[in-house]
Image (cartoon, rainbow, N blue to C red; front, side, top):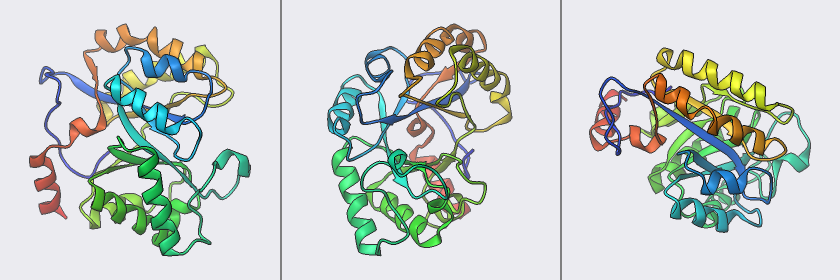
Length: 251
């Protein structure tokens, strides 16, 4: 979902093709699935957590392999283990200056980023002050936004529209920390079957505990996308100067 119309793809695609994007979250550390996704042939968008030991290296590898990169921004949740959040998270107790400083540092750690999506953030995405600062940062740096959909009360789409910043929203998750290869395959089939219901279909998966299973299921499902006449693209390919112009006129 995106609150504007689109046209195109940097890669030539038939007009009748459906375009979808697959985001893989939680890059930045040495976890399962990282190497497969970064050096494989699946055009995923790598969402890299800044401040982790391998973030800058993985940003460079992803860029060199032609993958799209976005910042997987750790954002305050309502519940969940603190260890899941990662270092230097954006939390409600921080001042505006501190939040802006962390956002600047995040981009320095993931310099090839074309966008930002939230890691966790069920509380942060409902905080008008925090979301406004993130949107303004994206606007200043020419980044798009992707709402991971961790809360139905997210303010990001509304505030992004007010600032004329392209904002997508996650369609479905294809895995979780307990999912099996077969579960991921099932979710991918659902994604393919329902792609036409969404203007901008975006699936999110993860590296980590089940990262290898997610990669294997996705690798073995490539032919299903082809058979359904579906092209895998990057979110930035949905954003052209004409689209940005139309978006500003609409809002």
